[in-house]
Image (cartoon, rainbow, N blue to C red):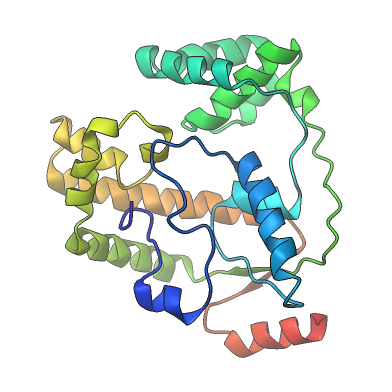
Length: 256
């Protein structure tokens, strides 16, 4: 999954040490909770040789895994796999109905297109017999390092133009062919993401190629909008435009 995940280029990978690139097969189950444990271990290793470590990315849940941590909620891999199979066979709607009945509060706030979060909520509810919304304490874990949070945000029109251009570039690099190579594995969680799902529908005859490309652009823009909304909920973030390099540098220096 090189193109659809926008994996750093060889030049970028050579410019600075990167971690957690090409470490998993698409079939392997991997959660934000697992990332929390793996990344914290790597961070501690890096702090042996450096006073500063940079984490870069846009996947908000994984950022929060490091900066805030997760509640220690019950888990059962067999039940989780059963829920995944159930949603694949009957659609995510069957789990949404259960969530609406057992935890209407979380049902109102959850992204109803995010199968992973819905499955996780049902998993916790069935194991604990309690509401997922009540068990999520949301108490931030204490880390033994200081965290400086920075968001790079562009003007909305410029941001959307960049997203559209990036999708065009990914198409030119072979995103369609990459998606086709994973078509027989399309039920896997890792492939239920923007860039792959749209082409899978195209291959199934549900949309044309042109429609699939436009949907990738639209869904990428929507994802970016949700990311920005998530970041705005946290007052600790410092906001800059990508052009404000000097200001970002000065902020980091002042904190150090």
